[in-house]
Length: 401
Ligand SMILES: Cc1cc2nc3c(=O)[nH]c(=O)nc-3n(C[C@H](O)[C@H](O)[C@H](O)COP(=O)(O)OP(=O)(O)OC[C@H]3O[C@@H](n4cnc5c(N)ncnc54)[C@H](O)[C@@H]3O)c2cc1C
Image (cartoon, rainbow, N blue to C red; front, side, top):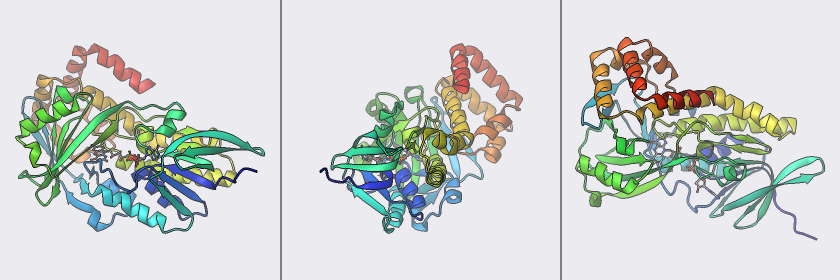
């Protein structure tokens, strides 16, 4: 006789922000939840600049000590060195990401229906039939488990996603923490065709400590060296260094039979900035609601998960993620002169004001619609698109498919 495999209602792969927050949301239900995380300590390795819009506190209760600073100004620097400053209502938070991940972990772990297996690696899964029900059997480095729902909160390379055919296009992100003397109210963004898939950032975490990093599609170490050279920063003075992958594109598929993908695994990340936290917190809320609905109906089919998770995700964050991606496509095709022209237009017209009033770090759709009504901006975009006809095709394709 074979040993009975441990059974759970929900098994979450990945104990980072998406996994811990989803576990927390489900922990007040009567479901039995297992979280499998390959690292032995929650929050590590640290891979985040920790800049999150004010929506953070609208979405979740954030313990005070997790917020380290708030920035009032965004300074955008173009490839020629020309810059503009934008400020507004947004005032994003700079957070302690390790503490944020840990806070949800501590809360969920305290519940008797939640089990954390740390230092255990998910390998693969297979569908099994029990009476008329389809269940999922997962195999890990330590054994196997049976679950009704499997959630991939397993990041950009998502092994769960891979098995259901979801692949992400990822860029590299790298960052150092260092002492410095920049303005502590300003976050800097350095744009350059060499790291066109993203930008270089300086994020002040307070206490004269800064997170200096960048995202790039290729040659990340070379580009990072160049960037630090521009800033006149000596890498050997760093306090620490971190890095990771950032998925870039539109939101991916996230509903399958008995399976949901939440967070970076489903590319719920803004292609403009690489920021994922607001998006994945919103998605995790929808995921938790969908999971409860599946148990109510005792139906774990793709059809139910699509209706209750993927579709609501598409309607809310998905639409905005697409706009973010279109903006990214435009940004990565701007050359030195385009940036200079764009910055001049922003300075000379009322665009700066429009951005300050309607600029939303996560949901840019309303800003885009307002900017489209500004004749100087519209002229600039039309001139730019005329110069880049292949981009027009790419933009239209991205909007449709
Ligand atoms: C350099 C950098 C800077 C960033 N800056 C910002 C920022 O300023 N603001 C912002 O909002 N976002 C930022 N992001 C993005 C943000 O960090 C991510 O969107 C977020 O961490 C995604 O959370 P997640 O839980 O979906 O996935 P992840 O944080 O990637 O976590 C996935 C988890 O799954 C685990 N896992 C993977 N495979 C397995 C397996 N086989 N078995 C068991 N466990 C597994 C991993 O160990 C990990 O803990 C940044 C990212 C990078 C790389």
